[in-house]
Length: 305
Ligand code: CP
Ligand code: NVA
Image (cartoon, rainbow, N blue to C red; front, side, top):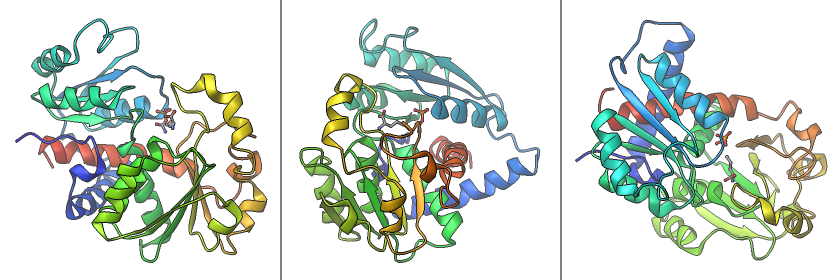
């Protein structure tokens, strides 16, 4: 059976831990410029239906650094699901490449791609989730805190794709997760149910930022209007007033709290320059770890650790 990485829950808890350990090992090898080329003679197609900085750069650079070749296929190249059926692209690309990474709008297209591809598929974000991001995030928290014990993560903002992946992680790792959002912007109930049914983590949805952030180890935010929702931006800015992560909200945790953001950030909207540039902001370490987490995910699903 080939392996894909479409949801964090595609991995068991042990596999997630192994992947995080592997990410740290491979990160050290890259920092030391060791001659480590497990992807030699391997190639990857990267299919992007949406824009990207981090995902494209980290996948392409990571795959290259480990000896492989990655091709960038932008929104105007393949036209997945438009110019050509997803299941046809899946089989064509599988004939050329050893792995596929895709960033798509519709999640059902991602699962269809994985179903019909004969090589591993990695999800580089859909409207529904962003599993590579949250693997990089938990790696970053582990590196900074030294452990993941008694962890309280408070996500402030839209209950979007990032939140769904946090909820999936909560079904594999134990932590306290609070999503604070305006009414009507909660994450989907099936993802909340999945996290609750796993019985590991404490999950809550709040609409009161000041109370919810108390005692948080991490405050995390993301844009209020995701890719594909930019026409709702003005309306959302009105609805999300009071949900900005600023110095006052950071102070309301009552402890030394890390600030995280998957980026890109809209400075002055969901967070402020002051928070992004503060000593507690770990957003650039987080961005760097996209590459290391993804390298480990690819090694694992390609079975060439
Ligand atoms: N965080 C993230 O996925 O960034 P990009 O959209 O720039 O890839
Ligand atoms: N929620 C954001 C994440 C970007 C990395 C979006 O989907 O646009």
